[in-house]
Amino acid sequence: MKHIGVFTSGGDSPGMNAALFAIAKTAEVNSIKLSGFRKGYEGLIDGDLVELDTQELQKLVHRGGTFLKTARSARFLTKEGRQQALENLRKNNIDALIAVGGDGTFKGLLAFSEICELPFIGIPGTIDNDMAGTDFTLGFDSAVNTAIENIDKIRDTAESHNRIFLIEVMGRDCGYIAMHSGLGVGADAILVPESGQDFVRLLEKASVYDSEEAFIAVVAEGDELGAEIAASKIKELNPKLDLRITKLGHVQRGGNPSAADRMLGIRLGAASVKALLQEKKSVMVGILNNELSLTPFDQVVKQHQVQDELYELVKIFGK
Ligand code: F6P
Image (cartoon, rainbow, N blue to C red; front, top):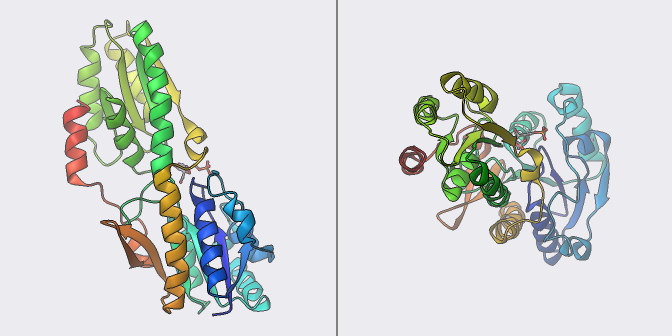
C-alpha cells in the first residue's frame, strides 16, 4: 500500500476534519502517501486532488465543515462519471480509497465497486445517525448539541408568551436528532418518521392546551406531515392558540465538533487506514459498544433501526 486517496462526500458533518487529520497522521507513520480528492465524487471525476499536509490538518481538528469540501454528485450516479473516476484513480496510481460520508456516499461506493477493484473503506460521516454498523455517526452528537442549545433559547421566548412552538430538526427520514434533542430539552411532544402515531398524540395534547404555559414540540423533518401541516391541523382544532414554527435548518450542520465527535473522527480515521493495512475492503469502520467494528457496505445502507428502548422513552416523555 503506497498511495491512499481520501474524500468527503454528501452533507458535511462536524468531525470530518478530525477524521482527515487522523487518516493523514496514520498514513504518515506508516509511510503511505495520502491525496485528498476535493468536493467528494466530483473531485474523483475531475481528477481534482491535493496532497494532504498533516500539520495543516492538525490545526483543523476543532473546526466544523470539511477541509476537502464536499458535494452531492449527480455525475457519479452515471456510468460515464464512474468510468471517468476510475481512470483518474489509475492515472494517479491510487491503491485504495477512504470515503467519509453518509448513506448516498456508501451507495456510490457499492456501485463503484462493480467496476473498480481497489479496496474501499468507509467512515460514517453524517449528522443523521441513520446507518447500521456504528452506534453513532460522525457529526450526530454535535448536531444534537446545536439543536438543544437553540431549542433552549426558543423555550425562553416560548415561556414568556405561553406559545406553542413546533421546532423542525434535520435528519432526513430518520428521527434520531429529533429524539435526542427532544428528550434533551424536555419537549412536550416529539414527532419522528419512524411512527405514524406521534401526530395523533400531539393533536390530542395540543387541542387541550390551555395557553397558560409554553408547549414545545420537536418535529423531525422526515415526519410524515411536517411542521407546517401539523401546525395548521392544531390551529383547526383550537384557533385561539398562539403558535410559531421554527426550522433550525443548516445551523445543525455547522459549528465546532463536540468532544465526542472529535474523538469519533480520530478513532475512525485511524481505524480506516489500519483496515487497509489489514487488507480489508468494502467495509465501514464504526464503533459498536465502544469497540471498533467493521461492517460490509451492503449492511450499512438504509439499515438503521430506532432502538425500542429509546422510542419507548419518546412515547413516555414526549406525550
Ligand atoms: O444528510 C444530512 C442532511 O443535513 C439531512 O439531515 C438533510 O435532510 C439534508 O442533509 C440536507 O441536504 P442539503 O444540505 O443538500 O440541502
